[in-house]
Image (cartoon, rainbow, N blue to C red; front, side, top):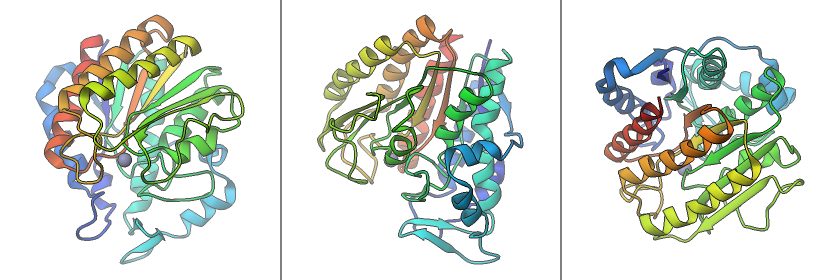
Length: 308
Ligand SMILES: [Zn+2]
């Protein structure tokens, strides 16, 4: 089987204003670069999905509030740095739809694994709160979809974005079917992510690391991610794939190199092979230096392709 890239061009119309780091170029450069994989990839567009999966993840009131917030022109602010424009409506739904399409494709054996090249990102979006460039929590909708539609009981979300996914932690705090594991810079935005935050069922596993963390230090710490995955034995693995831990990223202070994203993906996939029949879906979160983002996503996708 092959690896799929799920993307569509509606992200271009999710405008965040001049000088905003979470900008359309991010996904454009990724998509352009991945074309070099040619026949090794299947390209798919996100499909429409049942809104009930949004309402399980967030709540009705929040979803209604978001739906009525998209401006007819100009910009609206959902928080200090979460900006939406008229085109954001379609882009946010396609970002959620991409993970649904990816999961369906893996379940239908259309492809082995998938990477969703979409924006806006999702892991800071809480049950009732947009923040940190995130509106709907895409990966969380994916986990709920796996539980509701495919009756999975053990889903692992591995979040290697340099920021803690406070939103994903918030949404799954009381859900024993979902193990959320995050490596992140700490103390740092958004302020959460200590080792003491464990979730109701010990289903949250935070690995806070200091500013300046090097490749070697990071990959050592990633050993704890793998150890936790081995204990949990996930039936499906989702990646919250942020690439802002790269040394060139302007928004944080880790020192990872592009190749580190290949290594961490490879190591995770070797466990996916044992526990989840290689079922892995990854979705883009952060990453704000265009060159670093392009290289790092290529490394990540290369590892996904090599699994086949
Ligand atoms: Zn981030």
